[in-house]
Image 1 (cartoon, rainbow, N blue to C red):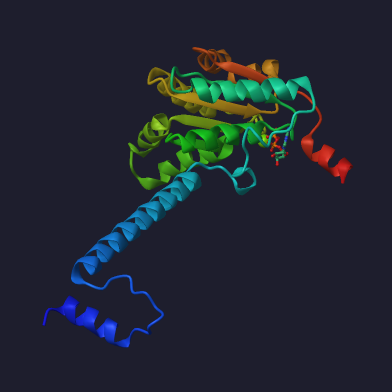
Image 2 (image 1 turned 90 degrees about the horizontal axis):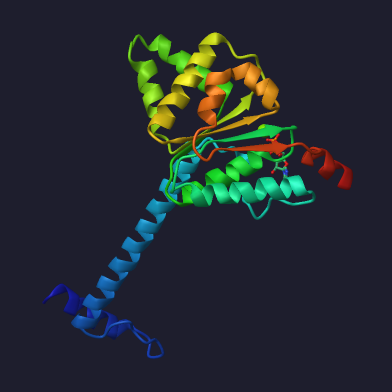
Length: 245
Ligand SMILES: Nc1ncnc2c1ncn2[C@@H]1O[C@H](COP(=O)(O)OP(=O)(O)O)[C@@H](O)[C@H]1O
Ligand SMILES: [Mg+2]
């Protein structure tokens, strides 16, 4: 006897009278199987998509503290915050249209990383590759390539970095930049702007100090296109939260 007919008959013989079976004939069983196959393949696809998103998020360099940062949970209590929030929103909306860099400069704890992560989270959801990395980590990654006895690994890494849709370099100015560091940053920004890839910078330094640290050439590159410079000069959100508690 055919397996499915045997199965149906077996089910019919043991099933209690109050239970309504999902299938009573071979055709229904086939349809039921097809439907289950479809549902499980959909759930596999969903799981794969979630895993892919997790990997993208992990590779994005967005730290745990900032994973849930968005435009909607950035609170406004002064006109400066309103301006940086609106400009950041505008930045992601125009992201596809043209490449433009940004510099967030100002006091610690004012939300530079919050908004940079909100930009990153938004772009990831829209299929873009992003990387937020401190300048110290970026440099140590590049220096590490020297140990690998591979002449081209430094340029391979710079190549890889140049392909990311948005690179955000954090903590610029925490340490004095060496000439070598300036050359590498210039090279990265130069390559990225040539291929119309945007770069963001986060720093506690003001315009004058950042200019002195990085030099004319890098700042000029950063100003290309419709680039934006946003100032974050108000009290740290961290101290505000502490006072409220
Ligand atoms: N306006 C704001 N609304 C909500 N949270 C904020 C705001 N400004 C800062 N924060 C939060 O305060 C903390 C410190 O902000 P952060 O972005 O790290 O500051 P910065 O990078 O400027 O030093 C983060 O947890 C951030 O989410
Ligand atoms: Mg910061």
